[in-house]
Length: 226
Image (cartoon, rainbow, N blue to C red; front, side, top):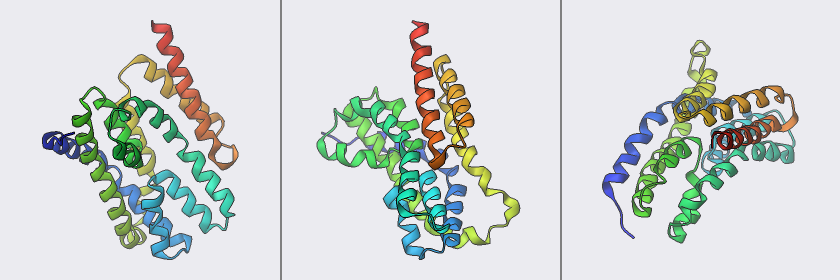
């Protein structure tokens, strides 16, 4: 087991541009913590505990509205369910890693990390691990730091800045960057259509439905090409 400094630096370098799109989202999280009425430290603790912006925002919003804890947890879990697909896709690569990495590595497997890591599965186990640690460091440190700053900056940002648009924009960047083959186009369109049609379902279940439909459509499209 060795550590490749060059791959570590590459991971940091490739993660930083994607992290820029996360910064406005972090400001929104900070504002959500303030508006939720929760103690600042308690609200911020959702950043390292949940470590998923979309789920964190929903949990903070629902708690601020007085939603029952059980319903809030259920909504957060539904949104985070897409990470099960990320885990399944990365499982063969993680199985080649030492046990400590198998336990700790998945913690950082958020949307941006998956988009980066899935392009490095061909690397040797040592090179992949070094790359992943570099990219993961950017997001773990960066997210927790910027959400803390968001507590101070978010409430004073003018509404005219339209920070809410940063959330869909962030995910659009990830989707567009990852669409490089026909089956992925089919998967993205099917997921978008299914999510739109089921967006009214309770507890954000529409997101899970969209993810499942997208994966199924992508698999079918891939098989039809063969």
